[in-house]
Amino acid sequence: MSGSKPGWAVPVKECVSRSMRSNKGKDTGPELILRKALRENGLSGYRIQWKVSGRPDIAYPGRRIAIFVNGCFWHRCPRCNTPIPKTNTEYWTDKFERNVSRDRRNYKALEDEGWTVMVIWECEVRKNLPEVVERIRAAHDSKARPAVKVSDMDISSTCHASSMSELVRLLKPRYMPVAIYHAKEAPPSSSSPTEEHCVVASMLIPAWRDGKTVAATAGEVGCKGALNGLGLGGERPEDRERLARTYSTGDGERPGRRYFSSPGACMDGYIRTIPVYGSPDEVVVVQPLDEAEAAGAPIETVAFLADALEMSALITLRSYSGVPSAVRSGFFFGCEGVYSVPRQEGERAEPKLVLGMTEFYPRRFIEDGRMTVSMPYSLFKRMDETAGSSFLSEDLWRESAQSGKKECCRFHRERGRGAGRLRSEPREGVRARPYPMIAVLRMKDGHARPTARFASILSKVVACVRACELYNKEP
Image (cartoon, rainbow, N blue to C red; front, side):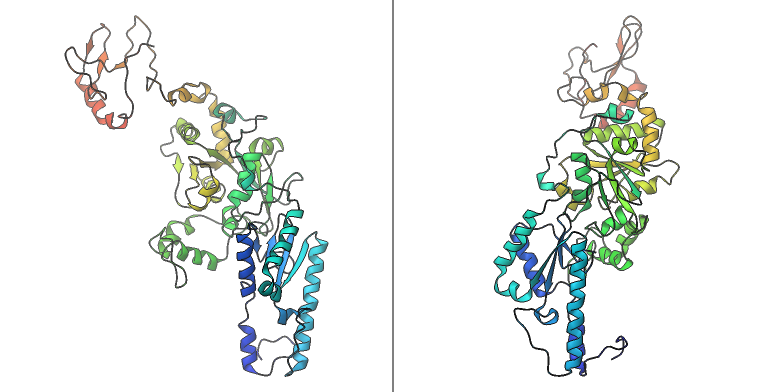
């Protein structure tokens, strides 16, 4: 048989070779049955084919539990004691010995690395599934995990208060922004990602909510998209092509999500627009900004988890120096919106803020009304330098956004000098309108006279201020 290794016996019959080639290496029937049972019993959060010794079929990396779902025939179940085929016995004996020897080496390597190894046999899954699930639950509950679960998070906690930059001190965000950077090894105080599939839940939220430093290698992130989004060398080209089909028209097996009109539109409008950074050998670190700056970390991007008011303030501050277009947004993964896209913006002369969490999936982990506002660290430092001389230095911007205020703006006027002030002052005998179309200008002589030029200008912008009701209240 072509392709066989030197010195190995081969099956004589072609039908046997064809049958062996058709055997699945993953997603076998027993695996699918067990994974479904684990989800139904509240034991989700596992990873499939985790990249450690032996590539366990099911793994809980946070608890370091590796589960192998072995076929009774191929891995020689001691319960079933299946007989060796009588035809070509030499080949089958050698084949089974290699399988069993390889299994033992993998189990030993994992145990030496601190993993709990569980071997589940095909016959157990088919005959006694509830007992198998309970064995896994006992191991799962007995192993403490170094990081928090998203389900345990109170997403309304306050941010850190120490070592704040000027921008963070004046903005007073609910959550301390996080710094994202790459290193050769994880910081000593860092924790591993939680068991959730998406890195928004397993890395970013623990850093925002609990102030944790979370570090991961390419083998520890659960989502393949994070290899692109967090700069860990990127996905394989065939995976990106599959993603383009999934997000557009689909393929023969699965319907598409219709985010794009065609796979080509997805490739041109999304996938090819975001470069790939880093390598699988690096460690990506997500750390609260104040701690990262204090440690002198090589920060690459900064990400805020902002509500509408904080978002408005950051965008306004970016426009402070006269930048005509301050924001970039579009469809991209949540992790791409906090690292890859802002890093790409950092390569431009005038980088933009990146508005993220526009993808639907990570919204399940994010508080309603919040988005990410991210930027290259160089842009953050520029904005931090100008924050003290901007509108952030006073709280007027925050007051103007509060409900119940009777003024949309605060106009200062020196009494007796007649500085101009907008008023909604109706003429005598004319019914006042809630959204006046004509304003009058208080002139220096104290008389209120409408000016044609001013009325013309106001008519062009009144559509933008129809949500604001003007009141005649003296400051």
